[in-house]
Each structure stands twice: as C-alpha cells, then as structure tokens.
Length: 100
Length: 170
Image (cartoon, rainbow over all chains, first blue to last red; front, side, top):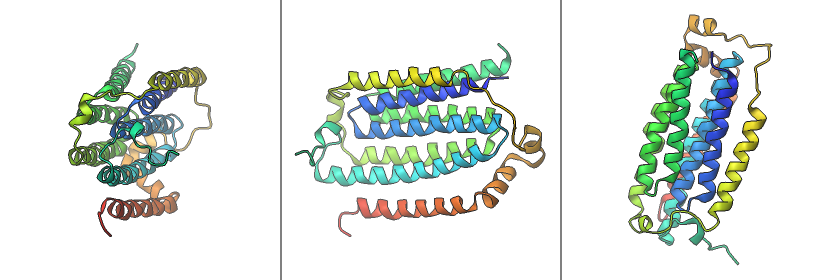
C-alpha cells in the first residue's frame, strides 16, 4: 500500500517545479505551460485524496479543474495571439505597455 | 518496498523528471512534446488510483486538445528569433529561490499527512460493483448538477471569448 503522504509530496514537488517555471521563464508560452503543470499537480493530490477518503468529491473536482483549464488555455492563447499581432514579441519582460 | 510502491516510485520519478525537463526546454515545441509524455504518466497514476474516467479524460482533453492548441499557437507565432536569446528573466534566481522555499515549506507541512476515518461510502468494492464511470456519473448528475451546468457556461464563455479576442475586426 502506498501511503497518502507520498502522493501529496509528489503533488507539492511538481507544483513547486511549476512555480519555478512560472517565475523564471521569459517566454509567455512556457509560462502558460507552467500554469498547466501546476493545475495537474493539484489534480494528482485531489485524485489521491478521493481514493484514500473513499469519496467521489475529489474526482468531480478534477473534472471541473480540467474543464476550467481548457477554457483558460483557449482564452490565454487568444490573448497571446491578439497581443502578438500588435507587438511581435512574447517575452514577458518586453511586454510593458502599461509601465509608467 | 512492495510492488505497488515500486510502481508509484517509477511514476513519481518520471513525473518529477519530466516536469523539470519540460520547464527547462528552450524551444516551446520541445516543451509541449515533453509535456505530452508527462501527461501520459499522470494518466497512469490516475489508473493506479482507480480513476479510469479521469485517466481517459486526461489523455483526450489535455494531451489531445489543450496541447494541440498550444502547438497551433506556437505555429502561428514566429519564434525563430526567440530561440537565440536568453530564456530566463533577469531576476530568475529570485524566482527559483521562491519556488525552492515554497517546496521545502509545503513538503515539510504535508509530509506526515494521514487519512482519518470517517471514510466515505465509495470504497473500491462499491466502485467496482457499479463501474467507475457509472459511479462518477451518478454523483456528477445528482449532487453536482449545478456546478456541472456552470462548467458548460464557462466553456461557452471560453468559446465566444477566444473568437472575440483573436479576431481582427469584430
């Protein structure tokens, strides 16, 4: 039997890798992929809790998280395309139109 | 270690390794392809946790739809120039430090987590007698019917919003 804490530790580690990617990468697409990674790590912990607590709630939540992630990816990538049309760059430190 | 623990160790090691590989690729296309392998491994972990439906959804929606969407957008943007410049931000050491501190903090907090009774009614035997998808569907269409309908609204907003944002002139 695998202890529950192993799953939660795995989830925390993958989430932190996503955080590192989010804070360090310069490419907007890679930042988006780090966000997807963080969502997935949370899904792992939700499914693990659902299994160990013998409840269906976690799996239902994961279903909604996946639906929201799909919506978020569609909207976010549309924003990237809309921005790229005006300023052909997706490096986050060069996206500073609102900077005073 | 027993066989399930070895199984978990393989998947956990691969998931951690692949996430590190994914966030360090310079070319976003390579990142997306490594992410595909990562998602297949996460789906394997879901199977291990008796969540067959979610494993299928993980492959179909994440690997099949979202990653293809990423690849399409990368194709639309001209990223030749991006491949030759610095791939990390100026203050990347600070960002990495935040991530590492966060990891240490969370891992020390959650390391001793155990499940306390009372357990729910969906034991492995109960799920197996009905089938995993049927059990999940019954819960989703009764107890979580309203969130389910709201999820459909969220997807509708995403469809309309993506078209409105990406269109040149409305």
